[in-house]
Length: 150
Image 1 (cartoon, one colour):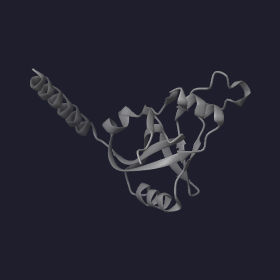
Image 2: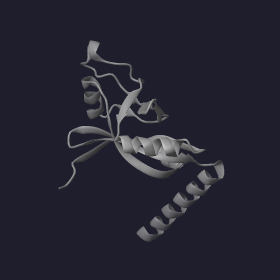
Image 3: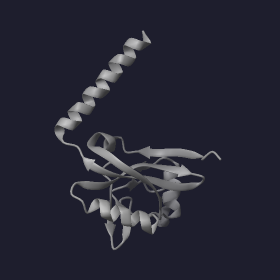
């Protein structure tokens, strides 16, 4: 069975700023107007992160623009939103994030079979020299691709 997935937003900066250790798929607790706004592609994951509070996972800093026809039903665009994960997955995340240097970073938000899902990554921050190394690799790959195209 083929999954019907439509990516609505990606956090491009995350793969540049972090080493991705593991990824998880999580559902989100959203209001109707937020879902409609996401379907229009009005969502931004830049500067967003997830944190664990009282055994629950929340995403903070994810900006969902207010739905134009939503009027009184619109919520704060930057409010904390609860992520839906299995208890065993939350236990794993608690174990990983208590280790020094690990963070929970949203990588992308997408619609899968009519439901809004978030791809969550357990990541370690890169140092400045690691970022320069990634840029050099990308540049070398681009050059090789250009030469191959000719």
